[in-house]
Length: 301
Ligand SMILES: Cc1cc2nc3c(=O)[nH]c(=O)nc-3n(C[C@H](O)[C@H](O)[C@H](O)COP(=O)(O)OP(=O)(O)OC[C@H]3O[C@@H](n4cnc5c(N)ncnc54)[C@H](O)[C@@H]3O)c2cc1C
Image (cartoon, rainbow, N blue to C red; front, side, top):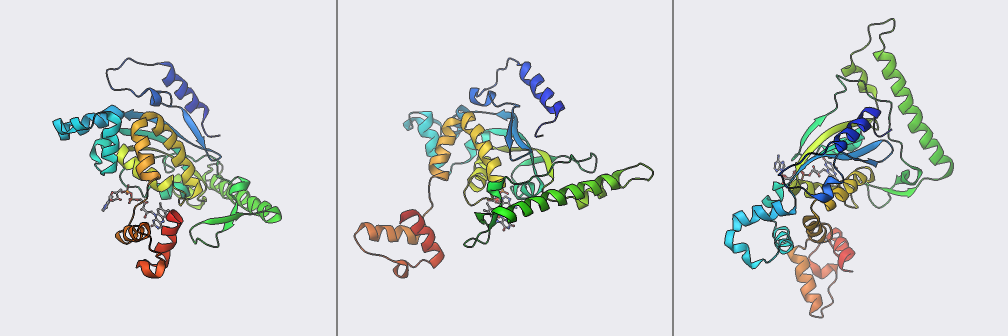
């Protein structure tokens, strides 16, 4: 179950007691506040708190530019200018705090994003729930033959059934052993901080994760991208859907310049110029490596 009955009661209570405020409020984000968005089989993301909106980004930028911003006539234009020119600090004026429930192997990728504040569930203090991530059949895929860091065709038939059985059996057995070691029934019972060490990486953990919008965009660019592992990508996509409602102008600029845009090397710019001038340029004449050329052609054909 993604949410415990206590958590559901807490969310209902928090949403039932709105307060008046003088602070900036994003109507889009208010609709998400506290509510859980389910991700994978037992996970979720939910917004616990946020600060700022599109106007806060504009307000901060106008402090630094003063009268100089007057030539940018509207907020959308200014936000797009900031994003285009990597003027990132105004985006840091917005903050978000999330409650995330996620498998440990996803948490291990996520925690590499150091520009955030994290507080994780303590398995030294508390006993973990019997909850494991088991991939849906369409995500149970073979090793990719073209990408060492990825998956390929979906497993089928007897192999798929066997793999699912192994995943469920091993997780169940590990949790049975965890409970046996913790038990104080006729024995001392092993400390929680030690008993957890046999549990598999698909065990769920939870944390509060707080970051600013600039660093969140960096996270989303890497983790909502097709190159990211599916299991972290779905969390990033769920967060992105909230961010879109929170700061619609900033998110649109992010989608345009970061998610949808491409970075060109000087060599790539040169090849494009030569091609536009009518020259036929292949990899051999481009000065690019085969890998670079493959990626270049992937975008430009
Ligand atoms: C598809 C994919 C595959 C990956 N594969 C691997 C892998 O095989 N092995 C592996 O170990 N990691 C891997 N990673 C993790 C990756 O290398 C980064 O650690 C992770 O994406 C976090 O990025 P970041 O450091 O830019 O983010 P953050 O830690 O949030 O940092 C944001 C930015 O702040 C600056 N910064 C933060 N801390 C420092 C610092 N101490 N010194 C200097 N600058 C700093 C940097 O400019 C950085 O880009 C992978 C990531 C992705 C998306």
